[in-house]
Length: 147
Image (spheres, rainbow, N blue to C red):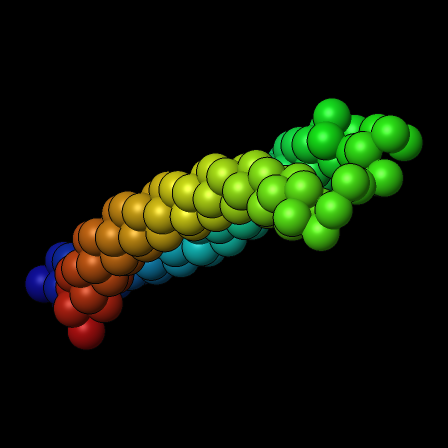
């Protein structure tokens, strides 16, 4: 009877050890998934920031080119000599109107880029939050089983 009891206890200990190792393995896997999810989120945010910065830089370059073009089209050497103050004022107003139009387009483009960035970031953060909740539940289940 003692041999049977010892054999059964040894079997229980082995089974408990295997279950514990499985639970610890599950916990380690969940930690890896959490770490991977955080790195993925960080990488995605960095990429989105880079894309938003690139869009803003493109918009500014486009605006600068437009300003240069407007100034070249508007002011030629003969245009710098005005018959009177009124004609000078008209020319300056033309330039201001043209520049304001380009500035408005630039502003709209940058605003849209910022809006797209914010929406993408919110969407990605919500997705990450959902994943973290799921992984936290996995971790709790594993820890409850371990306890």
